[in-house]
Amino acid sequence: MGATLLKQQFGFSLVDGANCVGRKLKQEFGSFMPALLDRRWALPTPDTKIHRVALSKLDQKLGEGRSGLSFSIDAQPNMSHESIVNGRGRPSFYVVRDDLLHPLVNGNKARKLDGLLPLLEDHSITDVVTCGGCQSAHAAAVAVSCAERGIRSHLLLRGEQPDIPTGYNLISSMYGNTVYVPRSLYAKREEMLRQNADLVASSTGSVLWLNDILNKPSSMHEYENANYMPVDACGNVHQGEKPKKKVVIVNEGAGGATALLGLIRLVKYLSQVHLLGKVKPIDIVIDSGTGTTAVGLALGAICFGLPWEVSAVMLADTLEGYKQQEKRLISDFMEHYNLHFAHDMLNEADGIVHWVERVHPRKFGNVLKGEVEECQKIARETGILVDPIYTLAAWERAMLLCQRKAEDDANVVMIHTGGTLGMFGLAQRYKSYFHGLEGRAPTSERL
Image (cartoon, rainbow, N blue to C red):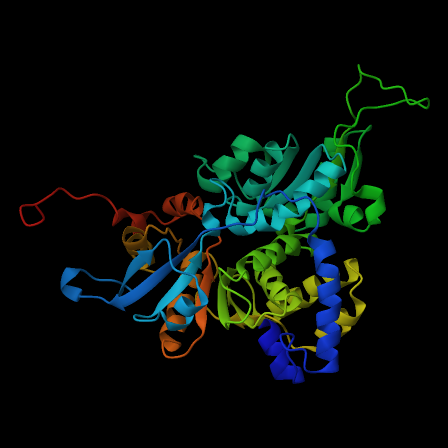
């Protein structure tokens, strides 16, 4: 749970640096953060909208809601410190609208690609090979983002091609080159990715794994010419020749050291005095597929010494699986950026993310009865669309926390990661659940 969890475990806080170890961590992070974030980014700015959602008991005569609550929205909340501390009437929480960052790319995907895409351009990458499920938000994000930069994407999608492409699958097909891979072959991901990358590169191109780029000394790759043309030994440009393909393999989900950079950048933006600030205790709530976004947010809170806790709703793995992923991501990040002291210190901690079960647990990918109607209700009352697989889980957790904390001075902030396009795929899979949304003929009572 970020800085707060470290204080519980080690007796010091990064905020006040009261302990010599705490001061050392604060000093190490403080000295490297400006240089780390001084780079080219895919997003022009880290800015994002913040809305406030207030809860109230539902008048059952006016309709039924799965949560038993109704919602109201403040699209321009007063984010001053005084307002945040004293502005409570009804229980409420803030929503960071990263779902609005891009019309086709999920907010969490845009953040994870924020630091990665410029590296691909700096290395003159011509093609990207990656993989994901049939309705992979990651694959769609890579396809769109690469196409916007003149890079070709090759997407290996698990399973069979749907009869009618929709949602993320449709976007992947429109923007990238899709190949459907049998599940038996997909199980051997590295072998599958490498073989397809070799086919894309052909005999004259080259293939790199993303880690090959990340592990190169920064002086070798910061500003390679993205408009590379073949030259001979004398330096003469061969204008008539096409550049050789330079293919990079990006693992499913794009989780890694570079993926964390965009989340740390977001934390720095949100911690500005006129937004969430650096003093107020904040409970950050996020839905977690791979867990990368949650780890990036928690690491950002530690880097800037913020009294923030990150609660990540586990959706696709076990607690042990998420903890292992957390340790791997932190280890990769610290080793890549030579933060050896912080690496050793954080390795001793039990974790920096608070991993929590979903309010209504289920097998990943399943939708429960009434959840589609709840998403519809939220959309109608707030203008915010959540989906039953991912973001509804974070929304329900935020509701629970803000009601528990109605009497204290902590604030609950949900990071809306996106997922709008996922609703189209769900409508195909769970047709009976969506039939209830069909329009009905008006009656005299309704008129």
